Image (cartoon, rainbow, N blue to C red; front, side, top):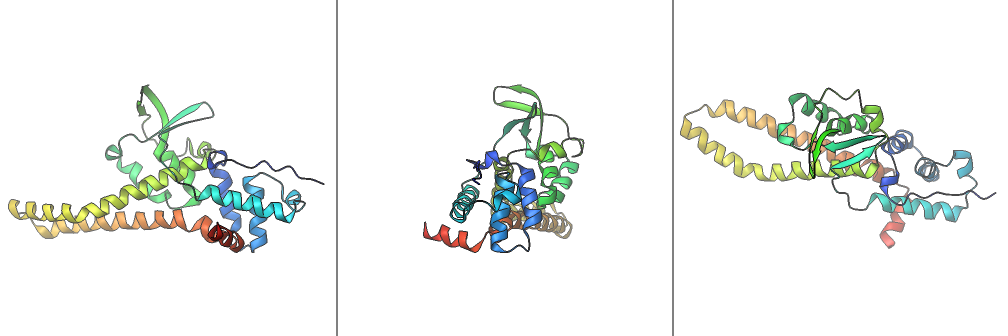
Length: 235
């Protein structure tokens, strides 16, 4: 019995929910079990049908899927989903404290990544050419389930964008702190109070970046079957 395999051509054809489902089930599996799970989750083939696929075809399909994940990711500002047009937060400096707290809570947790995306992407209220405004933030409950259906490449692009942005900010901090220190002295302020506040901000940013970096680089790649890692190195 031949099994028809519908290969996704890009991560745009894989949903966040599929990836969450894969990560939830993948830990602790053996190599062949992981390969079967990859095909089941990303090609939407029932587990009993995966067993009927030729071994050589399984290897080819899994290598194809792996190659999708190593392609460069970039930020996608707008996308449409189930009749809604969502836009990425247009002004990060204008984020509310509630948005930041929820984003910090969810951005490094794949089980709740749909909630992180519900912070970063919200329905567009008004739009003029490339300029747009999104609806006010009222928590993640309303769109969290819908965000499970968003394309995985957009999720990863948003993660990479935040990691790069945070890395650039940390790199720029030494110059900023030098200028801030001079300003504190000139104004006669208490350097202790200001220094403590700055240190807390740096620690918070470093923690978020560390969690996000782990989320970006450890989950899929650490779970990847050994044979696929070897195949990638020989390409």
